[in-house]
Amino acid sequence: MKTSLTTGMLLFLFLFVGCGKERLCTCGIKLTPCLESSFEDFKKNNVEAKEIIAIPKDEGYLFWLRTDASAHDGTEDIINDKCEVVCIICGECTISGECITGIPESKFISYWKK
Image 1 (cartoon, one colour):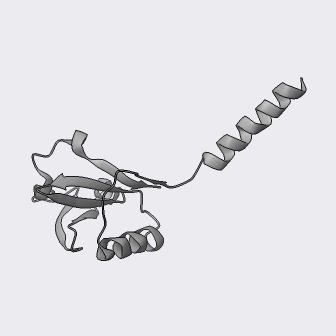
Image 2 (tube, rainbow, N blue to C red; image 1 turned 45 degrees about the horizontal axis):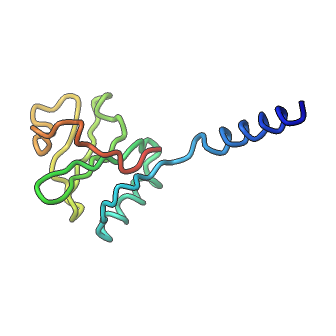
């Protein structure tokens, strides 16, 4: 009985500590100082920040700063390694996400997730 109680408490503690934590990929993507700063600003200053998705493009990556705003007529930026917005994702745009056209979602990497 004592063993099962201890096991139960450890399982509860493990689940409690693990829930609600941010996840950062261990995929080996090297960030420029500009990206590190942009990502920190995005996570700290944007209450609706949900995820940063790395999208392979040419010899590097583009980064989609996800907030789910595009589902509500807002916009989400996709930036390059120089922190330049290269395209946007939005619900009502006529031109949206052209910079990632042709890249299958299976190639997308969840770099950070809330």
